[in-house]
Amino acid sequence: RTAEGPAPTATAADLQALKLAAQALSGQGDGWTEILQGVPDAVTATALTMPAGTDLSAVPTSQLLMPFSGTVPLVRDPENFRVLLYDDTGKFSQAFPLTGVSGLIVTWSEDLNGSNGLDAGEDFNGNGVLDLRALPVEFYTNGITNPPVVSRVVIQARRVSDFSWMLTVRRRGDGALRSADIVVRFSDGADTNNERIFPATFIRGSQFVGVKVGADGVEPKIRKGKFIFDGVNAQWYRVRNVQEKSLLSPSTSFWANYDYLLELESDAVASAGSDASDGVMDGSDMSSMAGAMFPPGIVDVYPAGYRSFPETAD
View 1 (cartoon, helix red, strand yellow):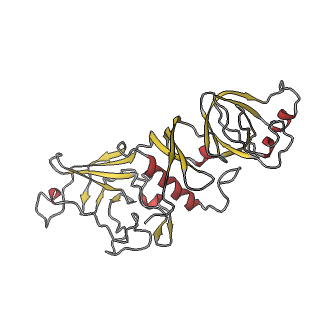
View 2 (cartoon, rainbow, N blue to C red; view 1 turned 90 degrees about the vertical axis):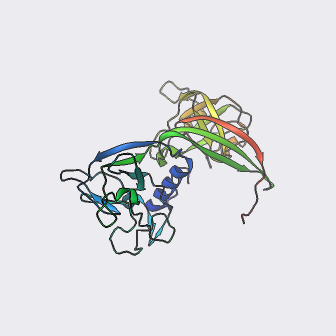
């Protein structure tokens, strides 16, 4: 990332892969919301046809969301969307990832084109094997040679408005040890706009931080009582107070160079930005800026202390 946003070399597919990976890593995975439900007109072992008039145009699927590089998925399918099927008794159910929708046809198999082979853009879970995911025998109440019976189908999306967590890990100067913070967050999903970096200056031992708006005029979402992240030193601080530049701001060198003055609840543990070199945040040296991030929904940050991690993995 850069001080003005995502690295320019990152493609749209790269960003989508990172977003899906973040959701899979940090989500709780135990909550689903209903998109639609109904009774299918026809059912096969790996797909079903919904009644005429059913609008499936806005239903998200793995086929629509998964980024590929040629035939290889950039990330394993987090299976954020699924089809839930009930047998004719309503007592037995089976859930599958929702891989594709074509017209009124809903598919949970990776064999989207029916070729019985693993073709480009079909290996959503990246295991190199064609996953047919045929219905189990409980759905064949009229015999295995007859079409399976599904009494009800429910299409669901994984709930992303949920508590999640992430680790902030710092390497010490000797490289042997790292310290870590456990960050608890309640969010409505991964959004790169919420992780934008803004130019800022931190001074070690000071509770004050200077922040500038983005070069394109985008303003940071700073809130009293919320958190600021020092992107250079990987440190979290809670914001005690926020002062924004206005027409009534005094004519000082600080306000000539910064748009926000933040007061933290604790002293900064490290300096960042060239304006901190003399220990005074006055805009005397703006040649290089640190980066501050204001992700919403941070509930609290819990220091995990120092941990020893292996340099390589077997």
